[in-house]
Every structure is written in structure tokens, then in C-alpha cells.
Picture 1: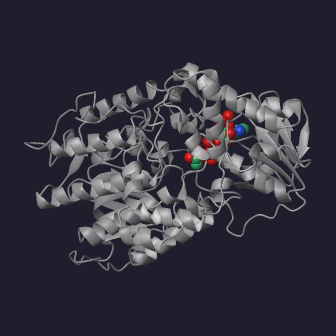
Picture 2: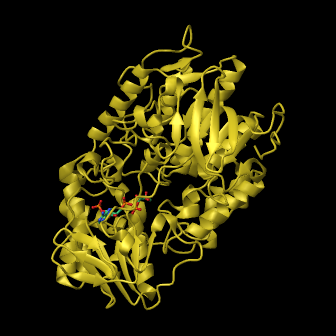
Picture 3: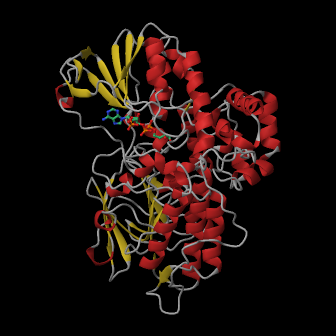
Length: 572
Ligand code: NA7
């Protein structure tokens, strides 16, 4: 118990290691959660963070080309006018170093660091029913106790390094993009192999190719990508962002994906072929995720999606000069945006460089890693000095499952989620009283511009804790029935879209061998989700059991989750 409790703003002084709330993780979620609990509610709160700085997923993902795909003016906290006024982004999409600067600025401006314990990895969290408190142990053997436990561990923080035979025999260097060395990697003149062509791989390829002697890209599933059209923000644009804060906030809080632009109301077959083509060309020039907004029905109609998919495949064939490489890159097996749609800077163009080669693993899969490189099924061996694993994450449920979390009656999170993650609203798990999960599975999270759901979740949790304290409620957890109907609703929403058609996506957990296939994010739209959460609170925290449930809001939500005024908006 090395820590002194400095006890925020006005909470009761507690013995060392004891807090009202413990928060795991100092990314976007954990920072704002600390601010809300400490500075708004006056609770004693402590953040435990593995890294030696704030940043969360952006602390670790510093691979070449790492950049957010949300536009910078929307990738910000919107709860504070001061933060909005005092910070200025420099590019259309923020690069990883700039996001780190932003989060450091927020931590310093809100004086958060004094309540964050860095270089502290949480090993186990155990609920003691008799005490109604959570006991938290770290890898270093420290022990903390708190009434409320808030998991702010992020959705994309548990790296997925595939267990390819022979990996440990490799005599060169290898890195996962999500655990990138802080001093960078020198690719000059080296033979580099990159496995993976998701959003990360597509960002990394053009940058690695600039200095590598030879870059070989190992592609298992071909992927769409749209030019990001990144660039510096002009003074006019920066002024516009400052002046239009209120309008931007209104848009990001009312659109399904929480991005700062509206989705077109035009469906693909509302217009003739010429007009359709013109709309797609315009959207291609605009670039980024705005491309996906050019029609209303891209994720609900396969026929509509096919039209746009064909347009994007043709673009690949136009850009990539070598015919065989172009065909391998355009041989995409899933609807556009059914997997997270990457945006890029010169991805396909990079395959026109002399030092870049594509290996199509669908034709010739990886057999093993050898001391010298990668051997394919055909027997061909590609000699490599460096292997880059751009192979993604054990997403959404992975970060929490990697901690030994034990709730009521010895129930572990691994047992509770053995058939796939089960939550109510992505915010709580049955059997784990007073534990909250920011952007947990079942939250809209990764289908959105993340800071928007994060702010909403954190504020909801803060209000909930305030309500409990005001009303003398000692525990809250969802009823099993409420969890059951939420899981069913999450599935229904996904099934109304084409999202489940990408059978190998991380939305389904399908990228991690042995992981149960359950569609994890809530695809009903962020605005609708917000309305559902507000409706549940208005009905006295319907679906939650408080203090054992007698006379409180224990109950089952109807399975349709249709609060008044919340339109059915697929959040895709
Ligand atoms: P993704 O989107 O999960 O992409 C991982 C890539 O790695 C994808 O192309 C995978 O192919 C490939 N992969 C994974 N395992 C293997 C093996 N064993 N062999 C060959 N190829 C493999 O992760 P990202 O980091 O790119 O993006 C994650 C999110 O971060 C992104 O969506 C943004 O939200 C930010 P597959 O498609 O499984 O065939």
C-alpha cells in the first residue's frame, strides 16, 4: 500500500489504498471518469495505469503512420468549453503523437496526474460481498480497496499476436503494432514482412515502404480503403471549428456514428446510374469516413452495397499497375464497411513501388516462421530482417478478460462471459455489483467516433453513482433478465445490417482462435443508445437491481428498447 490518498476535492479522508472509486486505465475514458468522480462528485478516486503516461490505446499504438480515422475536431472532449477553446488541432486527422499531446494537455489542465498511479498493472479485482467493496491487486503486489470499480481499459488494447509455428525461432526482430517500441524501429535497407491488412496495416504500409529496403505485405483478407485526404488545417478551418463548437456538438450527438457529418438520405437506387456515379466520385474526392455517408442504405441493403463495393474495387484496379497484384487487392469477400472501413494515405499506390510486394495468403498461406523469414505452404521462403504483426486485437472483451475479475459468489468474468460477453447497455455485468465498464461489449463504442460514447458512458456512470449516494443505495447491478434482453437487442440490431456478413471480423471476435462468435458492439446507433439510457434512468434505473432489488428498479426491459423519439438508426 504505497500510495497516499490525497482525496480529490472534498471526499472523506481514507486510509492508504482505500478509495471511493478505482478506475483502471488512463485513456480517454479513465481521464474523464476521474475528473467526473473527483471534481464533480467530490469522491476519492485513483486511476491505475500500466503505462508510464496517459494515452491508453494511443500510448501503445505508435506504429508508423498511426493516425485516428475520426476528424480531429470531433475527436475531442466536448464537455468543457475551456478545453475546446484552448486546444488547436493541426491536421484533418490527428496523428498518434498529436493525440498524445492532447491527452497530456487534458490531464495537466484538469490536474489529473496527482490521482493517477502509473506503471501499475492490475492483476485481479475481487468483490467482497460482506464488505461490499472491491479489492484490487496489482502485478507488483499492491492492494487497493474501493466501493466502485470502473473498467476504462478500452476496446482495442489487448494485442493479438497469432500463434504461427516457429515464431520464437525467428532470428530477426518482430513487433506488434499495438506494442510498438517508443524509440521507433529503423527499417532502412531492411527486408520487412508485414502480416495484416486491417486499418493498422493499411496505415503502416506506405510509411514503412518509404525506408525499407524491401517490404513484403502478407494479405489474408483483402480490404477496401478510401483515401483519407489528410492535410494541414487552414486558419479558416481552425476558426470555423472554434466558432461552430455548439453545432458540431449537436451533430456528433445526433448522428448514428457520432461523426461530425450527417449520413445522406439518398438510397443507392433512388438515383440513376450517372448520378450515382457522380455522388460516389464526389465522396471519393471528399475522402475519409465521409465516403460511407454518401448513401443512406449501404449497410442495410446488399444490392446497394454491391454497387459501392464494385466502385471501390474498380478504384483499386485503376490505381495498382501490376494486374495480378491489383486483382489480389480487389478480391474482397465481404460487403463494404461490414468490417471497420480503413482510410488511407497512398495505400494502394504503394504497391506500385519497386520495393513493395504483395503475397496473397488465400492462394499460398503461411506455413511457418523460420529463423530466416516466413515459409509459405508452397515451400517458398521469404527472407526477412523484421516482421511486423499488424494483426489486430482481442477486441472489446479481451482487455477485461485478461484481468482476474471475480464478482459475487466467486463468479469470474471468464465464467460469466464463457459463451461471449454479456452486459446490460455495455455498462454493467450481472453478478458484478458496483463494477462499471466504459465502452464495454454491447456499447456502441467502436462503431462510433469514440470520444462521444465515452463521454456519454462516463456521465451516465457518474450520475448513477451520484444517485446511489443521494438515495443511500449501496449496490447496483443488472438483472439477468435485463442482460438477456440487451444481448438479444444487440443481436437484433446487428442482424438488421450487413455487419455480421464479414464473418471474420473482430466485431464478432472471429479474429481470435477459440473466441466465441458474438457480435459485440451495439449497432442501433449512438443517438438511439443515448435515448435508451436516458429512458432507463427516467424509469428508475429499469433493469438494474439496487440494494438487492426490493422496491427498487429491478425488472426486465421489454426486448424492443424503443424509447419515445428514438428512431431506428443503424449505427453503421
Ligand atoms: P484488424 O482490423 O483486426 O486487422 C488485422 C489484420 O491482420 C487482418 O488483415 C487480418 O486478416 C490479419 N491477420 C490476423 N491474424 C492473421 C494471421 N494469423 N495470418 C495472417 N493474417 C492475419 O486489426 P487492426 O489493428 O488493423 O485494426 C483494429 C482497429 O484499430 C481498427 O478497426 C480501428 O478501429 C483501429 P483477416 O482479416 O483476419 O483475414
